[in-house]
Amino acid sequence: MKKILFFGDSNTFGYDPRALFAGRYSENIRWTDIVACDMADELEVIPRGMNGRCIPASDYEIESLVRLIKANAPLDYFAIMLGTNDILLTDSPDPDRAINRMRTLMMQLKETIDAEIILIIPPLMFPGCLPQSPFWKYEDASKKLGAGYRVIAEELGLRTIDASKWMVDLDVDGVHISERGSLEFAEHMKSALKSL
Image 1 (cartoon, rainbow, N blue to C red):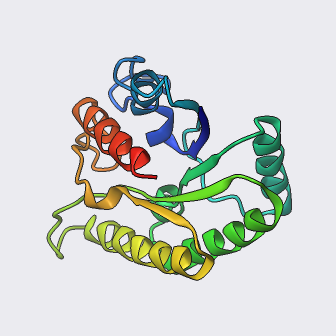
Image 2 (tube, helix red, strand yellow):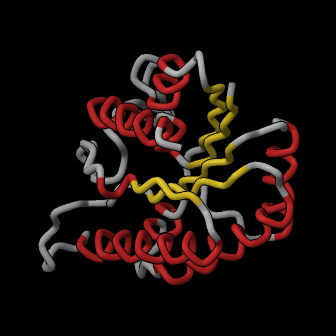
């Protein structure tokens, strides 16, 4: 039996953008719960998603993450899917800043935790936007984020799961995984995990 902790933002939390007051999809829709149920014989899943979460950057944020990981030890895998909010929550998205934050975090975690790190490249935001769209800059930034994460993984010898290639269905906001997208995400994630 392997053990994995998924650390992410609202798309790991299972946020339902149509619900009031930060509602969540039901357990039979959330991709983390589907993976946990369907792979229960071989994998223990610990989902730790939080709405609005950005890449931990301050000493306090990184120390808090290390405490979370050690509190759930022993872990075989620590899987992180962050960076979307670092790009989205600004009028001038800067993927290089997010990439540098992730590189620093990965370097520190490699020296601190025993679990194997899996860097998950998040789904693209606003896929298919035209360059004249006000949202195109976010799609472009999320593509650059993915490219930067691939470089980090190669530099540091990390495993990657590239969810940006899955093109799962998004809700009308262009950022959050829809109900159908969550089911699609779960199937892709199960296949990726079985290949580890």
